[in-house]
Image (cartoon, helix red, strand yellow):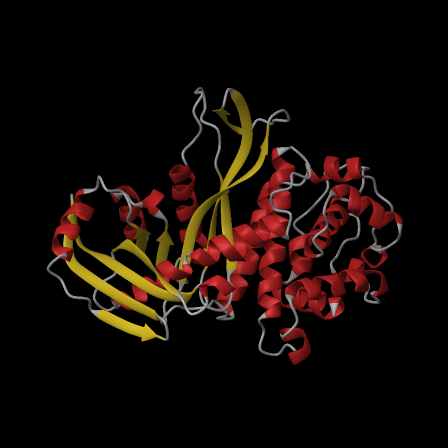
Length: 411
């Protein structure tokens, strides 16, 4: 199974061309950088827990088909820090662009939607680097990193397209804002995915006119969560809600969905905005013998501000906001819990960028491969953790010479 997976990502995503981008400097007699990059990438695919585990596996000869012999954890960290971070960003873009060209992005009612959100990583109290952000909690200084991630969202699969790190502000005790990193990320998405993206969806942090205008300037539409009670547009719509009727009313078993649409709104200099309000009423049965036959009702509601025109229905806007959680659940939560995204393998900016890139690429590849239509029924129905366990078992029994195929020879 591991051989099929490695062969698929090698052929479709052209891994040899990516490895050729990694070159050692003239006169460098250290461990080849391509082998270190391959070791980290394969380790991310197999969800290794630490660099020390890579050291143990290399001593047992489990990477012999990649031309990787015994290597210490210190050597991995030292050589990994010498690989430019731009190489790992190129890997993520190479994967995302190939998925876009192959039309494998999941759409929401025909729209290609990309979600933006930030995540906090590597919270520590002692070990720091020049790219660490900091804050004071209960009299103690915490050091951490934060990144903003862009990922496609939809009902079937997700694909990470790019990420941007939040940097500490120069000459100030304050950190750079997440929105500032998001603006850089939007510019990067425009350069590499201009025509593939149609809608940008984000949480309430990005509900401001600057963000909306930047998205419009790039030729996209925006959908953001609306929660701040101080915004005049939200206060005005709440006054209209008492006299409006829902445009969508749907019932699924014990669940009732109602959606209200308020078009033609203005906010400062911005016009033709829409606000969507929805309520989802769910009736559930109480658990336990003492509550037998009893039910309770729970109501979920929310607001969304969008620049989409009337061609995009209110129900589609609700689906876009609903699938925004795919980034939280399928990328951030899964990345932290199973892909060790929250584990700091080495506290150096270049190492952190490399490991984030390798883990996000591995996560995207596994999501893509496990949802392919040509996958056998036995593998398609198996849990993803079972696929990873099989891959770890097959690592030492590979017969393909990946060192030659991936162009891992010394340069």
